[in-house]
Length: 184
Image 1: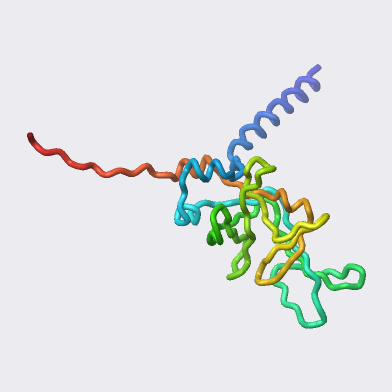
Image 2: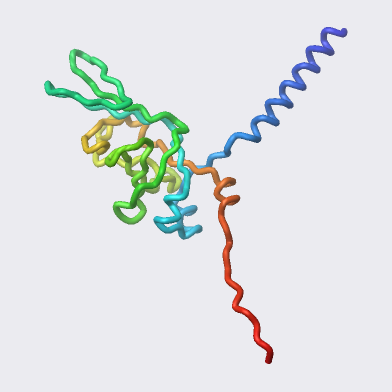
């Protein structure tokens, strides 16, 4: 009997500890067109928002016969071809760089002038800001990254920008100026 009590008591304490610890991690919410419009953010505001990636994005391109410079990427041999690969993992923080046109965000997940991906609202995915590609054919899309064309798998089409709304609400300041009062 004593062993069972210890076992149940142990599990209850463990579950309670995990539940308490889980409250400390950021709660990420998909960045949507509605969220963007409701807050009426400017480009300056967007540069102060920390974005995160919802899913892994793997960029691949074939390397020709010339030399290749890969920074923080991998070179793999697939079917006798040399393939450069850049992996941007789920949860990777990113920053807004610029808006190439209305409702399009260039977001960078690593340093470098042209190291950004374009995201925009996807009407078939509840207006979430997902990865945009210039072409989607069958199981892959084409994106521009670091000044070159890369291929991404079809699952990357659902990679979404995420934000920590709680933190954004804590940081947001509602500012006003007092007009002053005069005697009548």
